[in-house]
Image (cartoon, rainbow, N blue to C red; front, side, top):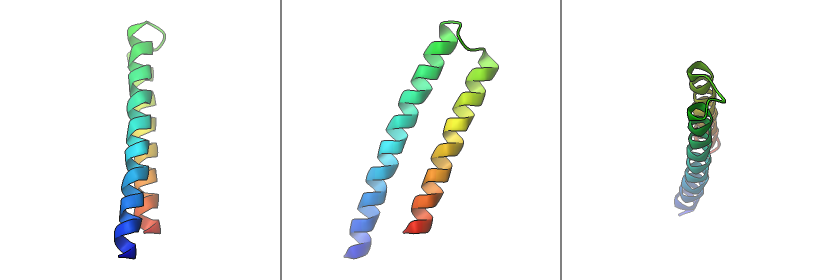
Length: 64
């Protein structure tokens, strides 16, 4: 039973991180479309967000 609760908490945290990254990607794309970021800067920023999300996921799996 405890594993189910921990897994549920991990899912909630991961979903929150996904939403945060989605919002970040949307802002980055808007900046690029508005001419504030180059395409290369946009790709770099999105890559950074993706790496952060993957590290977060690994941390959640490791701590489970």
